[in-house]
Image 1: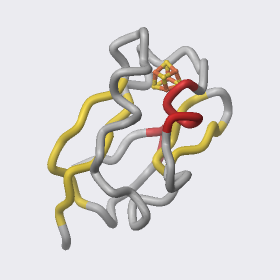
Image 2 (image 1 turned 90 degrees about the horizontal axis):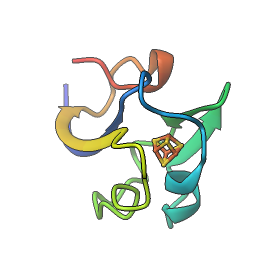
Image 3 (image 1 turned 90 degrees about the vertical axis):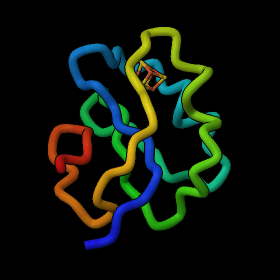
Length: 77
Ligand code: SF4
């Protein structure tokens, strides 16, 4: 299992504004059912461009399994 510095979305705080999706150059994030989801962790450059645009404190960086379960918009460890 590989670990990587990746954005983790708090599904309770995310309101679906998609600011993080628009801020991501490599398009690693997408909206799924009005929730930001890291759909392509392999393309994420760990540059954190998605963090500052979030006005809801819903997205944070963490060392997580890069090939983990992405259910419900977050990477579970
Ligand atoms: S910027 Fe924050 S609130 Fe908006 S979609 Fe992304 S995680 Fe959700």
